[in-house]
Image 1 (cartoon, protein in one colour):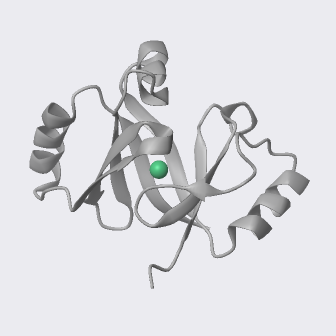
Image 2 (spheres, helix red, strand yellow):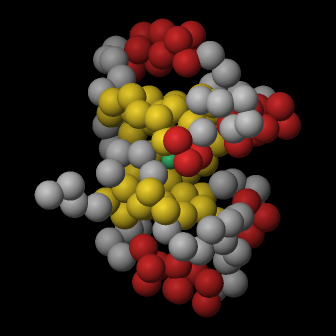
Length: 134
Ligand code: CO
């Protein structure tokens, strides 16, 4: 398991990009809307891991709900694994609770699932596995 990216909920994508462009000294390398999640994602290469800015692409987005409740800021940690289904079974065996146990398509050519923050010390955790595009 390795830290793949840190997800950050932002209200204004333009403003946030301006800030992170200046902070990291480089621009976003990929922008992608995940319709099923109603989010638009902006990826930065931040060295050992990526940063994923998340904004609502529609009013009824989980990102809007998150920002209403907790404000902008760190939204989730994402760990990449080689075999997501094996890892789900392992973590279930360790007593972790999942929001979705069945991996679904995410941004950046990944399949993803989320652990419930109530079982991970209040931090939303994403598991992701790269899927080949060939
Ligand atoms: Co993510």
